[in-house]
Image (cartoon, rainbow, N blue to C red):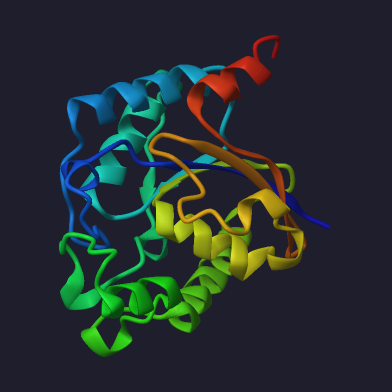
Length: 209
């Protein structure tokens, strides 16, 4: 039996987050606030040891991972399957909640006809990713993952749908910028251990660690 603990962090605030754009796999730099958020995440995780670390290939997550891992003297490996959900040709568009087509596509995550993804595509990508991560990890490993907001939502529904807390089921954004969530994989059975929490909440919970 192999149990792996994953520490999932969402990247800091970006320019596209500020502009209310559909970010997807189109990249946007961290804002000064986003960098400050990740410095807070760095402090929150300073005393946590990691056996390995992986990041989405997008620059906003690579920068986030670099900041978090600096005190640990580690580098994150780029893991392509952690990249954000793709909105295809709508990547970078300003979110328009009053547009019926936007409402339909966004509520159902249907962008495959625009060159992007749909729930089936990303959930299969996530399942394949964690099957590979399981092979790369050892029993009781603690693994840092730096990825994205929409990816985290799909991760929950892909890997632990039956174990999602009720308060998370109807939240559009489940994890904030720089937020932290901990979940575990026990021989392919996934469950949420903690979070998602913001940096202050995480630090308060682990003040005596």
